[in-house]
Image (cartoon, rainbow, N blue to C red; front, side, top):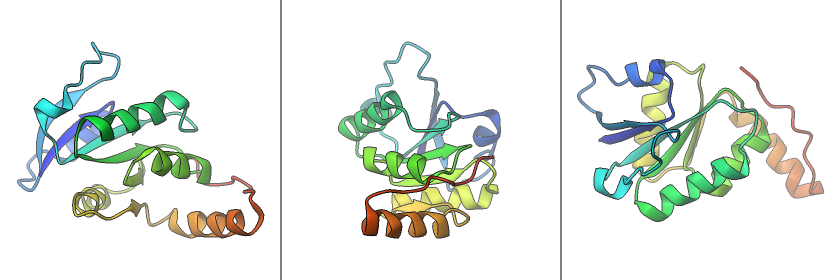
Length: 149
């Protein structure tokens, strides 16, 4: 499986070393020349590092542009696990959301799942996401508690 690492920390990059199931085809930073040329790289999955407390308009636009440029699934790897952060990432087009604190095996599982067409959210966030989604459906509002790590 071909992976592009975008704005990830060294820990995420190291998570793929020695694992033959994954081929890291590029490690990029949006702070570089920003010509990501994902179509040329042709990854199956883009792992996007995210260190802010929320998905900003800029980050959402980046996720959307990845979806327009390539068929790759996007997994956001974040420190923040609030409902707003998860829902904004998924609404922008990400197929997966994993907390930075998750073990390497969980990260690998998330990547496999989204590459197979699934929507994936960290197991520790699922009860909160479902609770807040149900509250949003019922009331149109959410008390965004979530998880910060």
